[in-house]
Length: 486
Image (cartoon, rainbow, N blue to C red; front, side, top):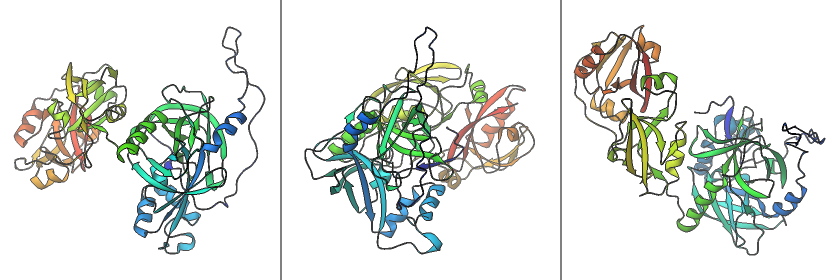
């Protein structure tokens, strides 16, 4: 998981245009040269974006929304991280307002950006800009203001498709995010803080970023200055093609701090096509909970290096269960693509249609296996149906420093597990050093299921005196492997 020093914030809504802006131009316009080693320059100077802006800006729109229901207003605000909600409070846009005034019950206004993808009025933007709105108004560069209809939205990817009743509208040129290179110049057009048609530029600083709030989007990371109001606006390459949709920022203050994230346009256009056709999005699903493989876990599972997606839990009746996937399997390849980090797997699976046949390479007990799976469709509650009925017994102590007891049916149902023993105490020892704590449900140990106290005693007694063994622990409904060093 990506470690973020700041706060991940949706960058799309603002309700006040009075924020003081630093209008000084700190860009160094002198040509820059870097020698490739053969006398040829890698960079000959900074690009001139004027022609690109003149051509593409007319297809970029401002989006304003009105939410009249207090319930919808609060729901929309709750989607944003706490730090960003405080940003709204400062400018009177969120519940509470300045001075602790009560939240308005009549209507709430917000601003964002979008861009026209067809001349008959289809506009692509972010879900968090329009998803909860009662009214949507699109303002074109020629100052026309048109009412818009929400065609469909997809909270999972933070995308929405809206339409205005117009024809012969200017459209953007759609490019390919797959062709985008790290270090390439990119440019954003949007309405930060409500300032129309603002242009900012920078470079692509990374691709395929995974963020804590999004499982299905391999974000494009840039250093383009993006602020509230930019959300839903396009990210262009130097050819004037849209390669991404500006969506999120990392910030401690609610404003731009050098890390901006855009949704790849290839993914966005696929979502837009589905929304246009059916009003909803179909997404592939395996039915597993996975986690990252660190160095200790790699050693405990017999891997040469940390890689792959470690299966912590398999939902009963899911495509993964039918394919024979088991907790403790490490998926190292999916459809021939090697998995370096676990976050890659949900994106690749989610991009497939339900019913697609796929192939997985897994490491199980130190050996590689190939499994065939038929991808299912992501349900509304993908973790439903994992409860079970274990046996009952009395407490037990262990040389690992654990005190355990049998889990009740209610305890298993609460954390959506079908077996395990409850840890009631942790003394100094290997388990404590591994981070286990009272209340954890121990589901497996050293690759073997802990489905009773007798099974736990037997497994614990057979543990080697030295080495590293994996333990599957369920904590508050989240299954996770830990490496226990003996």
